Image (tube, rainbow, N blue to C red; front, top):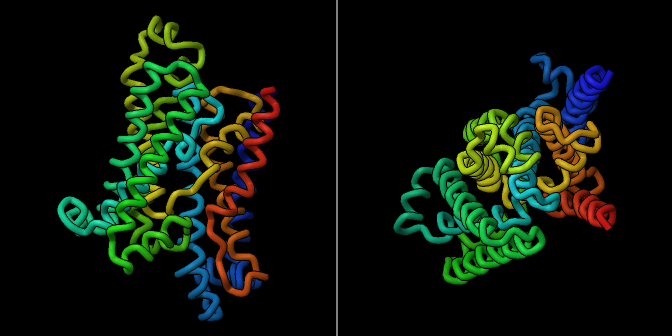
Length: 336
């Protein structure tokens, strides 16, 4: 009976994402009628203005939203499972700040290693963000060995984030105004910065991270019982930790490089997925995180471009905070 209900839930989530994807393409400062949208998606001749808006602006943005939502949600799930902390996530433990520091090194200091990575284009940004995210996550993991208390670990993670933010501020102070303006705009978070030429890079990085994450499902389920039990079953806890580090750095770093530091998605979506399926089994929760995260980011993207905004686009960070903060408060109240 449970298997049937789980299948129905997955089918329902899949159908909902298709509807949200269509709505994201249709809604915005210029609303596109459903008939014209179907004509463009079906490859038929239609209004050229609508065709340009859908294919060259809204579709890459909607696909980016789905990739970002899926990557950040699974990253959050991996970190919550690794640290056994319901409030762990890429933004809470300073991983986003580390990725941001890597991007700052490339964009604000266009000399030395920064200049070399900048010369690599999109790949340079991605590599810098992944290295920055991995460095912070590695420091948090080292700290977790010495500090078993979950609350203390969260505070230490926040401190790492503040250090990364402070270094980024220093780089901003010594950079030239033109690059500084570009970087500050990036910090607000935006899904529209990813073009068709950049999308394959983001897709490849996220796909590698997701593929590695799904290979860890059985190990993560064993870790839920306890590290001693996992070792007794022959699971290498150390290897699993490093694989989680690589997967999280790939996804959180890659997403941050292209879309900016997006908060709350990684922390909140795993809780929504567990609540929907009433399970901690990663075989259910991980694919659920992919679907729920993709759907939630599509909703957030629609909110950023509501028709009443006069053509302006809201920062995606602000919208995700409006969705995520109440859920975090609810989680904390439930634990009292």
